[in-house]
Image (cartoon, rainbow, N blue to C red; front, side, top):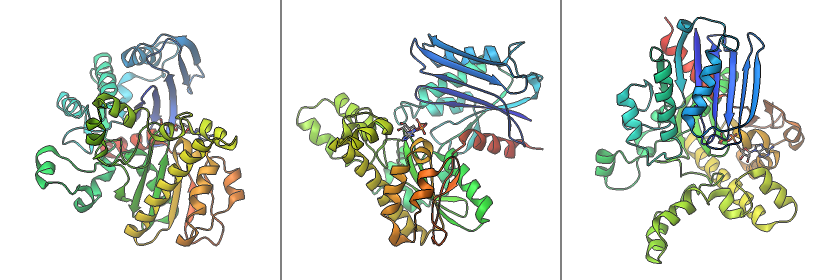
Length: 395
Ligand code: ADP
Protein backbone atom coordinates (compact mmCIF):
# COMPACT_ATOMS: atom_id res chain seq x y z
CA UNK A 1 0.00 0.00 0.00
CA UNK A 2 1.43 3.42 -0.97
CA UNK A 3 0.97 6.43 1.31
CA UNK A 4 2.27 9.90 0.47
CA UNK A 5 2.95 12.12 3.49
CA UNK A 6 3.14 15.89 3.07
CA UNK A 7 4.64 18.03 5.84
CA UNK A 8 3.90 21.74 5.42
CA UNK A 9 6.40 23.83 7.42
CA UNK A 10 6.27 27.56 8.00
CA UNK A 11 8.58 28.06 4.98
CA UNK A 12 9.02 24.57 3.60
CA UNK A 13 7.24 21.60 2.04
CA UNK A 14 8.50 18.06 2.62
CA UNK A 15 7.17 14.88 1.02
CA UNK A 16 7.78 11.17 1.51
CA UNK A 17 6.13 8.38 -0.45
CA UNK A 18 6.07 5.21 1.68
CA UNK A 19 5.44 1.60 0.78
CA UNK A 20 3.55 0.26 3.80
CA UNK A 21 3.80 -1.67 6.03
CA UNK A 22 7.54 -2.09 5.40
CA UNK A 23 8.03 1.73 5.56
CA UNK A 24 10.36 1.80 2.53
CA UNK A 25 10.68 5.32 1.13
CA UNK A 26 10.10 5.28 -2.63
CA UNK A 27 10.26 9.02 -3.31
CA UNK A 28 11.30 11.97 -1.16
CA UNK A 29 11.33 15.65 -2.00
CA UNK A 30 11.66 19.03 -0.34
CA UNK A 31 11.02 22.66 -1.26
CA UNK A 32 12.81 25.18 0.95
CA UNK A 33 12.23 28.96 1.14
CA UNK A 34 8.64 28.94 -0.11
CA UNK A 35 7.56 32.54 -0.82
CA UNK A 36 10.94 33.65 -2.15
CA UNK A 37 12.72 33.87 -5.50
CA UNK A 38 15.67 31.78 -4.33
CA UNK A 39 13.73 28.64 -3.39
CA UNK A 40 15.45 25.24 -3.54
CA UNK A 41 13.72 22.07 -4.76
CA UNK A 42 15.24 18.62 -4.28
CA UNK A 43 13.63 15.42 -5.56
CA UNK A 44 14.80 11.83 -5.31
CA UNK A 45 13.11 8.73 -6.71
CA UNK A 46 14.70 5.78 -4.92
CA UNK A 47 13.08 3.22 -7.28
CA UNK A 48 14.52 4.56 -10.52
CA UNK A 49 17.48 6.52 -9.18
CA UNK A 50 16.11 9.73 -10.81
CA UNK A 51 17.09 12.82 -8.85
CA UNK A 52 16.91 16.58 -9.32
CA UNK A 53 18.07 19.70 -7.48
CA UNK A 54 16.83 23.09 -8.64
CA UNK A 55 18.04 26.35 -7.08
CA UNK A 56 17.03 30.02 -7.31
CA UNK A 57 13.44 29.14 -8.17
CA UNK A 58 10.59 31.62 -7.81
CA UNK A 59 8.05 29.76 -5.62
CA UNK A 60 5.59 32.52 -4.66
CA UNK A 61 3.29 30.30 -2.56
CA UNK A 62 2.50 26.78 -1.38
CA UNK A 63 0.27 26.11 -4.39
CA UNK A 64 3.17 26.74 -6.78
CA UNK A 65 5.48 24.54 -4.67
CA UNK A 66 3.01 21.64 -4.68
CA UNK A 67 2.31 21.89 -8.42
CA UNK A 68 6.06 21.65 -9.05
CA UNK A 69 6.36 18.53 -6.87
CA UNK A 70 3.30 16.80 -8.35
CA UNK A 71 4.66 17.49 -11.86
CA UNK A 72 7.69 15.39 -10.92
CA UNK A 73 5.76 12.73 -8.96
CA UNK A 74 3.34 12.13 -11.82
CA UNK A 75 5.93 12.76 -14.60
CA UNK A 76 6.79 9.97 -17.03
CA UNK A 77 10.55 9.92 -16.46
CA UNK A 78 10.68 11.14 -12.84
CA UNK A 79 7.47 9.53 -11.54
CA UNK A 80 7.15 6.80 -8.95
CA UNK A 81 6.91 3.82 -11.32
CA UNK A 82 3.58 2.46 -10.08
CA UNK A 83 -0.08 2.93 -11.03
CA UNK A 84 -1.71 6.01 -9.46
CA UNK A 85 -4.49 3.69 -8.20
CA UNK A 86 -1.93 2.15 -5.84
CA UNK A 87 -1.62 5.46 -4.01
CA UNK A 88 -3.98 4.66 -1.13
CA UNK A 89 -3.90 7.98 0.68
CA UNK A 90 -2.20 11.34 1.08
CA UNK A 91 -1.51 12.15 4.72
CA UNK A 92 -0.96 15.60 6.24
CA UNK A 93 0.47 16.61 9.63
CA UNK A 94 -2.40 19.01 10.19
CA UNK A 95 -2.38 21.15 13.33
CA UNK A 96 -5.77 22.19 14.71
CA UNK A 97 -9.44 22.15 13.67
CA UNK A 98 -12.53 23.08 15.64
CA UNK A 99 -14.01 19.88 17.14
CA UNK A 100 -11.77 17.53 15.10
CA UNK A 101 -8.84 16.20 17.13
CA UNK A 102 -8.00 12.75 15.81
CA UNK A 103 -7.33 11.34 12.35
CA UNK A 104 -9.89 12.53 9.81
CA UNK A 105 -10.62 12.46 6.11
CA UNK A 106 -10.06 16.02 4.89
CA UNK A 107 -13.53 16.85 3.66
CA UNK A 108 -14.68 20.41 2.97
CA UNK A 109 -16.29 20.38 6.42
CA UNK A 110 -12.96 19.58 8.10
CA UNK A 111 -11.17 22.26 6.05
CA UNK A 112 -13.76 24.78 7.26
CA UNK A 113 -13.17 23.61 10.84
CA UNK A 114 -9.43 24.30 10.30
CA UNK A 115 -10.26 27.74 8.90
CA UNK A 116 -12.33 28.46 12.02
CA UNK A 117 -9.09 28.21 14.07
CA UNK A 118 -6.82 30.15 11.69
CA UNK A 119 -6.12 32.75 14.35
CA UNK A 120 -4.96 30.11 16.85
CA UNK A 121 -2.45 28.62 14.35
CA UNK A 122 -1.77 31.46 11.89
CA UNK A 123 1.59 30.13 10.66
CA UNK A 124 0.25 26.59 10.10
CA UNK A 125 -3.46 26.35 9.25
CA UNK A 126 -3.62 28.70 6.21
CA UNK A 127 -0.69 27.02 4.35
CA UNK A 128 -2.09 23.56 5.11
CA UNK A 129 -5.55 24.49 3.82
CA UNK A 130 -3.96 25.90 0.65
CA UNK A 131 -1.82 22.77 0.20
CA UNK A 132 -4.73 20.35 0.71
CA UNK A 133 -6.93 22.24 -1.79
CA UNK A 134 -4.19 22.06 -4.46
CA UNK A 135 -3.73 18.31 -3.91
CA UNK A 136 -7.49 17.85 -4.20
CA UNK A 137 -7.63 19.82 -7.42
CA UNK A 138 -4.89 17.74 -9.08
CA UNK A 139 -5.71 14.34 -7.52
CA UNK A 140 -9.47 14.56 -6.86
CA UNK A 141 -9.97 10.80 -6.40
CA UNK A 142 -7.31 10.15 -3.78
CA UNK A 143 -8.15 9.87 -0.09
CA UNK A 144 -6.73 12.81 1.89
CA UNK A 145 -6.22 12.27 5.61
CA UNK A 146 -5.29 14.78 8.30
CA UNK A 147 -3.46 13.46 11.38
CA UNK A 148 -4.09 16.38 13.72
CA UNK A 149 -1.18 17.31 16.00
CA UNK A 150 -3.67 17.51 18.88
CA UNK A 151 -4.77 13.86 18.49
CA UNK A 152 -2.09 12.28 20.68
CA UNK A 153 -3.03 14.54 23.61
CA UNK A 154 -6.70 13.59 23.81
CA UNK A 155 -5.79 11.18 26.63
CA UNK A 156 -4.75 14.07 28.94
CA UNK A 157 -7.31 14.22 31.78
CA UNK A 158 -9.73 17.15 31.59
CA UNK A 159 -8.50 18.48 34.95
CA UNK A 160 -5.11 19.15 33.31
CA UNK A 161 -6.54 20.45 30.05
CA UNK A 162 -8.74 23.09 31.62
CA UNK A 163 -7.55 26.62 32.31
CA UNK A 164 -8.88 28.03 35.57
CA UNK A 165 -11.26 30.45 33.87
CA UNK A 166 -15.08 30.44 33.76
CA UNK A 167 -16.10 26.91 32.75
CA UNK A 168 -18.43 28.42 30.13
CA UNK A 169 -15.33 29.54 28.12
CA UNK A 170 -14.50 25.85 27.68
CA UNK A 171 -18.10 24.92 26.87
CA UNK A 172 -18.83 27.83 24.55
CA UNK A 173 -15.47 28.54 22.90
CA UNK A 174 -13.52 25.34 23.50
CA UNK A 175 -10.81 27.18 25.48
CA UNK A 176 -8.47 24.46 26.77
CA UNK A 177 -4.91 23.14 26.49
CA UNK A 178 -4.85 21.23 23.20
CA UNK A 179 -1.15 20.25 22.96
CA UNK A 180 0.75 19.83 19.67
CA UNK A 181 3.72 17.91 18.19
CA UNK A 182 1.52 14.79 18.51
CA UNK A 183 3.09 13.04 15.49
CA UNK A 184 6.58 13.42 16.96
CA UNK A 185 5.76 12.52 20.58
CA UNK A 186 3.67 9.56 19.35
CA UNK A 187 6.58 8.35 17.23
CA UNK A 188 8.99 8.63 20.21
CA UNK A 189 6.51 6.74 22.43
CA UNK A 190 6.44 3.88 19.87
CA UNK A 191 10.26 3.80 19.74
CA UNK A 192 10.44 3.56 23.53
CA UNK A 193 7.69 0.92 23.66
CA UNK A 194 9.90 -1.19 21.35
CA UNK A 195 12.64 -1.05 24.05
CA UNK A 196 10.53 -1.01 27.23
CA UNK A 197 7.44 -3.06 26.45
CA UNK A 198 4.02 -1.77 27.47
CA UNK A 199 4.76 -0.29 30.90
CA UNK A 200 6.93 2.82 31.11
CA UNK A 201 7.09 6.45 32.19
CA UNK A 202 8.62 8.74 29.58
CA UNK A 203 9.26 12.44 29.06
CA UNK A 204 9.71 13.28 25.38
CA UNK A 205 11.45 16.62 24.67
CA UNK A 206 10.83 17.78 21.08
CA UNK A 207 13.19 20.76 20.77
CA UNK A 208 13.18 22.46 17.36
CA UNK A 209 12.10 25.83 15.95
CA UNK A 210 9.03 25.05 18.07
CA UNK A 211 9.57 23.06 21.24
CA UNK A 212 7.38 21.03 23.55
CA UNK A 213 7.68 18.40 26.25
CA UNK A 214 5.24 15.57 26.72
CA UNK A 215 4.69 13.31 29.74
CA UNK A 216 3.79 9.82 28.51
CA UNK A 217 2.66 6.84 30.55
CA UNK A 218 2.42 3.44 28.83
CA UNK A 219 2.09 5.01 25.37
CA UNK A 220 -0.47 7.67 26.34
CA UNK A 221 0.06 11.41 26.65
CA UNK A 222 -0.80 12.52 30.19
CA UNK A 223 0.46 16.12 29.98
CA UNK A 224 2.26 18.49 27.61
CA UNK A 225 3.87 21.92 27.79
CA UNK A 226 1.89 23.30 24.85
CA UNK A 227 -1.45 24.90 25.66
CA UNK A 228 -4.29 26.42 23.60
CA UNK A 229 -2.05 27.85 20.86
CA UNK A 230 1.48 27.15 19.65
CA UNK A 231 2.60 30.33 21.49
CA UNK A 232 2.78 28.52 24.84
CA UNK A 233 5.11 26.28 26.86
CA UNK A 234 8.91 26.60 26.71
CA UNK A 235 10.43 29.48 24.69
CA UNK A 236 10.57 28.74 20.95
CA UNK A 237 12.93 30.06 18.24
CA UNK A 238 11.09 33.38 17.97
CA UNK A 239 7.89 32.85 19.99
CA UNK A 240 7.68 33.63 23.68
CA UNK A 241 6.18 30.46 25.11
CA UNK A 242 4.29 30.82 28.43
CA UNK A 243 3.41 34.45 29.14
CA UNK A 244 1.42 36.19 31.85
CA UNK A 245 -1.78 37.30 30.05
CA UNK A 246 -1.75 40.57 32.00
CA UNK A 247 1.39 41.79 30.22
CA UNK A 248 -0.84 42.50 27.21
CA UNK A 249 -3.33 44.97 28.78
CA UNK A 250 -0.41 46.55 30.66
CA UNK A 251 1.50 47.29 27.43
CA UNK A 252 -1.72 48.44 25.71
CA UNK A 253 -2.31 50.91 28.55
CA UNK A 254 1.23 52.25 28.02
CA UNK A 255 0.38 53.00 24.37
CA UNK A 256 1.90 50.01 22.55
CA UNK A 257 -0.38 48.98 19.65
CA UNK A 258 -1.77 45.41 19.69
CA UNK A 259 -0.02 44.38 16.47
CA UNK A 260 3.34 45.43 17.93
CA UNK A 261 2.64 43.45 21.11
CA UNK A 262 1.73 40.38 19.07
CA UNK A 263 4.87 40.75 16.94
CA UNK A 264 6.90 40.80 20.14
CA UNK A 265 5.24 37.58 21.29
CA UNK A 266 5.12 35.57 18.08
CA UNK A 267 7.93 36.88 15.84
CA UNK A 268 10.48 38.78 17.88
CA UNK A 269 10.25 36.76 21.09
CA UNK A 270 11.69 33.43 22.23
CA UNK A 271 15.41 32.72 21.80
CA UNK A 272 15.62 35.64 19.36
CA UNK A 273 13.93 38.03 21.78
CA UNK A 274 16.21 37.33 24.74
CA UNK A 275 19.47 36.94 22.79
CA UNK A 276 18.97 39.70 20.21
CA UNK A 277 21.32 37.57 18.09
CA UNK A 278 19.25 35.12 16.02
CA UNK A 279 16.38 32.65 16.16
CA UNK A 280 18.80 29.81 15.35
CA UNK A 281 20.43 28.14 18.32
CA UNK A 282 23.62 27.51 16.33
CA UNK A 283 24.21 31.28 16.00
CA UNK A 284 23.24 31.89 19.64
CA UNK A 285 25.57 29.16 20.90
CA UNK A 286 28.45 30.55 18.81
CA UNK A 287 27.79 34.06 20.19
CA UNK A 288 27.62 32.72 23.78
CA UNK A 289 30.92 30.87 23.23
CA UNK A 290 32.44 34.22 22.16
CA UNK A 291 31.27 35.80 25.44
CA UNK A 292 27.96 37.43 24.37
CA UNK A 293 26.06 37.69 27.69
CA UNK A 294 22.54 37.94 26.26
CA UNK A 295 23.16 34.88 24.10
CA UNK A 296 24.24 32.96 27.23
CA UNK A 297 21.17 34.31 29.05
CA UNK A 298 18.85 33.04 26.28
CA UNK A 299 20.36 29.54 26.52
CA UNK A 300 20.05 29.60 30.33
CA UNK A 301 16.39 30.68 30.09
CA UNK A 302 15.67 28.01 27.47
CA UNK A 303 17.31 25.15 29.38
CA UNK A 304 15.80 26.39 32.66
CA UNK A 305 12.29 26.19 31.20
CA UNK A 306 12.96 22.64 30.00
CA UNK A 307 14.25 21.61 33.45
CA UNK A 308 11.16 23.13 35.08
CA UNK A 309 8.75 21.15 32.88
CA UNK A 310 10.75 17.94 33.40
CA UNK A 311 10.44 18.46 37.18
CA UNK A 312 6.70 19.05 36.93
CA UNK A 313 6.16 16.02 34.69
CA UNK A 314 8.35 13.83 36.92
CA UNK A 315 6.05 14.72 39.81
CA UNK A 316 2.90 14.07 37.76
CA UNK A 317 4.20 10.74 36.43
CA UNK A 318 5.34 9.70 39.91
CA UNK A 319 8.82 8.78 38.62
CA UNK A 320 10.58 8.37 35.30
CA UNK A 321 12.11 5.56 33.23
CA UNK A 322 13.08 7.35 30.00
CA UNK A 323 14.00 10.89 28.99
CA UNK A 324 14.28 11.44 25.23
CA UNK A 325 15.63 14.40 23.23
CA UNK A 326 14.48 14.93 19.65
CA UNK A 327 13.90 17.73 17.07
CA UNK A 328 16.60 19.90 15.44
CA UNK A 329 17.98 21.18 18.78
CA UNK A 330 17.35 17.98 20.78
CA UNK A 331 19.10 15.86 18.15
CA UNK A 332 22.03 18.19 17.47
CA UNK A 333 22.84 20.37 20.45
CA UNK A 334 25.04 18.44 22.88
CA UNK A 335 25.49 21.60 25.06
CA UNK A 336 21.71 22.01 25.56
CA UNK A 337 21.30 18.32 26.44
CA UNK A 338 24.19 18.53 28.90
CA UNK A 339 22.95 21.73 30.55
CA UNK A 340 19.49 20.22 31.06
CA UNK A 341 20.63 16.80 32.27
CA UNK A 342 23.36 18.05 34.58
CA UNK A 343 20.63 19.88 36.55
CA UNK A 344 18.70 16.64 37.05
CA UNK A 345 21.07 14.30 38.90
CA UNK A 346 18.72 14.37 41.93
CA UNK A 347 16.00 12.76 39.77
CA UNK A 348 18.18 9.71 39.17
CA UNK A 349 19.77 10.85 35.90
CA UNK A 350 23.44 9.85 35.65
CA UNK A 351 24.50 11.63 32.50
CA UNK A 352 27.53 10.56 30.46
CA UNK A 353 29.09 13.69 28.87
CA UNK A 354 31.40 11.66 26.62
CA UNK A 355 28.49 9.67 25.15
CA UNK A 356 26.59 12.93 24.73
CA UNK A 357 29.42 14.68 22.91
CA UNK A 358 29.92 11.83 20.44
CA UNK A 359 26.22 10.99 19.89
CA UNK A 360 25.18 10.75 16.23
CA UNK A 361 21.69 9.54 15.28
CA UNK A 362 20.00 7.41 17.95
CA UNK A 363 22.19 7.10 21.04
CA UNK A 364 22.06 6.35 24.76
CA UNK A 365 23.34 9.35 26.75
CA UNK A 366 23.07 8.08 30.32
CA UNK A 367 25.68 6.11 32.25
CA UNK A 368 25.21 2.36 32.77
CA UNK A 369 24.00 2.81 36.38
CA UNK A 370 21.52 5.60 35.63
CA UNK A 371 18.05 4.95 37.06
CA UNK A 372 16.54 6.99 34.20
CA UNK A 373 17.71 6.09 30.68
CA UNK A 374 18.40 9.15 28.56
CA UNK A 375 18.31 8.85 24.78
CA UNK A 376 18.57 11.01 21.74
CA UNK A 377 16.22 9.61 19.08
CA UNK A 378 15.82 11.37 15.71
CA UNK A 379 12.13 12.03 15.20
CA UNK A 380 10.34 10.79 12.11
CA UNK A 381 6.95 12.47 11.99
CA UNK A 382 6.31 11.37 8.41
CA UNK A 383 6.66 7.67 9.16
CA UNK A 384 4.46 8.20 12.24
CA UNK A 385 1.72 9.56 9.99
CA UNK A 386 2.10 6.75 7.44
CA UNK A 387 1.87 4.20 10.30
CA UNK A 388 -1.29 5.84 11.66
CA UNK A 389 -3.02 5.89 8.27
CA UNK A 390 -1.94 2.33 7.49
CA UNK A 391 -3.25 1.06 10.84
CA UNK A 392 -6.63 2.64 10.17
CA UNK A 393 -7.03 1.53 6.57
CA UNK A 394 -5.52 -1.94 6.51
CA UNK A 395 -8.01 -4.62 5.58
P1 ADP B 1 11.21 22.99 13.01
O1 ADP B 1 10.70 22.98 14.43
O2 ADP B 1 11.06 24.30 12.34
O3 ADP B 1 10.75 21.81 12.19
P2 ADP B 1 13.79 21.68 13.44
O4 ADP B 1 13.24 20.61 14.31
O5 ADP B 1 14.44 21.28 12.16
O6 ADP B 1 12.79 22.85 13.11
O7 ADP B 1 14.84 22.50 14.33
C1 ADP B 1 15.46 23.64 13.80
C2 ADP B 1 16.41 24.19 14.82
O8 ADP B 1 17.38 23.20 15.18
C3 ADP B 1 17.23 25.34 14.26
O9 ADP B 1 16.58 26.56 14.51
C4 ADP B 1 18.50 25.26 15.05
O10 ADP B 1 18.39 26.15 16.12
C5 ADP B 1 18.55 23.86 15.62
N1 ADP B 1 19.75 23.13 15.19
C6 ADP B 1 19.93 22.42 14.06
N2 ADP B 1 21.20 21.92 14.02
C7 ADP B 1 21.80 22.32 15.18
C8 ADP B 1 23.09 22.12 15.76
N3 ADP B 1 24.03 21.42 15.14
N4 ADP B 1 23.33 22.69 16.96
C9 ADP B 1 22.42 23.41 17.59
N5 ADP B 1 21.18 23.62 17.11
C10 ADP B 1 20.88 23.09 15.92
